[in-house]
Length: 149
Image (cartoon, rainbow, N blue to C red; front, top):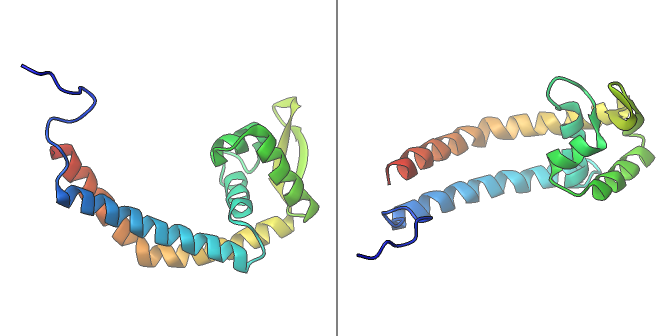
């Protein structure tokens, strides 16, 4: 009796499974495209917006070290440093010794950085009011459907 691939579930995905995941991915991509365009319309690259959001939205604090930011953006440390350099030149962030470890650099938003972030955040909040329920419904359906399959 063949054992098959242990990494694959016993029941192969159905056409409906593929359609569900494809629809979720499509709706997610529409939101991401909205986000990219909102950043551009406000003079930022999408990655710059993500960096500002990651810094201000870091759990339990309103700053992040370079390493923490690199992790949140899923980028290399040196890429995060370059991104911070560009944001700092625009007056959107500032660097200081990290409060818990002076050997590390902590990055915080300036008043101007917070103002830009807030403007783009408000646009995202409105868009999420529209597409959020659709994304949540698709995600819930996918989780339920694929768990049973």
